[in-house]
Image 1: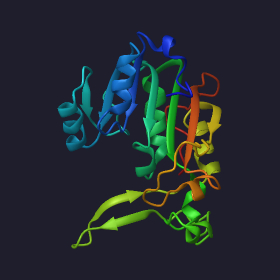
Image 2: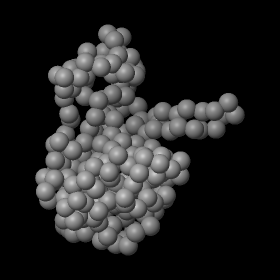
Image 3: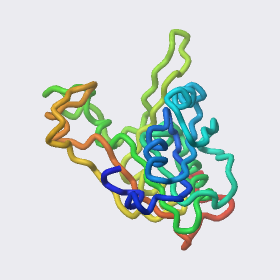
Length: 224
């Protein structure tokens, strides 16, 4: 938000914005405060119930990001903070859907766990600073319940994979932001700490614009 990757706050007023994988819709609430007209979308009904309890003066939509229930060219902007894209096996499908509902020149900003993070163990101390897995191993991280059913799946893609996905979906990559650990943050939680944060990035933010040159054909450019 402070980085103004969607544009200066004064330019957001009156803009139609789609938040994808919104969870409790924190971004949509901030966008509303700037005068934008957000729509918060998530596949989890429970997450949207949290958004409803907190309070939302904008539409909440329960739907799959790979089959957006909106007409073509419905939004000026789209954003996603760790939502949808890390959890789907075919991110190009989602990105093509986002491109479809964006107006010409529309911007998409999305964040994911920085791909380099996958090569390191989930530890905040010195033991978390040594590579323990191949950066190029694209095996998904899966958590299962007692009956062996997947309850959480997150897909690893390299930086190059993400760039190719963006381009294949008909976007132009405007910027790739790797936020540095802020000096004021002395907290430690999960696998993160100032020690790790000052050495490796935790987040990658992709700033994309709908490209009108070389748009994907009706059949799509996705991998076979």
